[in-house]
Image 1 (cartoon, rainbow, N blue to C red):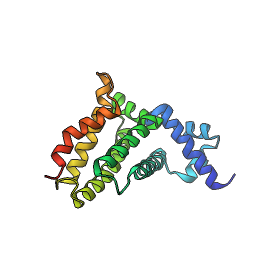
Image 2: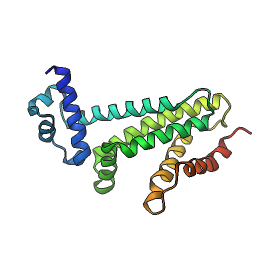
Image 3: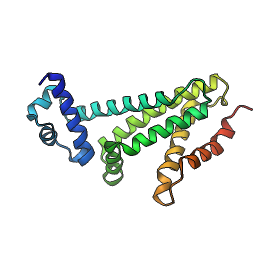
Length: 192
């Protein structure tokens, strides 16, 4: 088996282990067993568990960026692109087992590395949103406000409506979520 194949095998096994057991409970021994390689093989590619975890996070962020960019059409209005991108990212987050496990681990145990991993993912989303918002301001599709603040509010509002709301209420449909985002933000951001 080629070196590149072994590295990929290790990364896939680690992603599976992190998704099944969380960051805290994943060990290099588990990853080696799942990958069907000697533990020393892992160390030829990664210095430690943290480095392996970071590699997986980079891959997730790259996937999320690709998914978002596929949904953006430069000829569509800002809010339509925003809704398309956010829907795709939330579906990805909901379906990606590792992200689900990280959210559970942070909620249940407060594992610092899991929390830091989620913060890196959120930061990547916020950077992407900030660029889209800056572009919308330049095109005069929305008012000129601080893009960092708008990005933060958009993401938190969308997550609150799509995820947090469901913990105590009947889930909102995607259309309802879009309508609430539009009501809360579009009026305030739309050009006068």
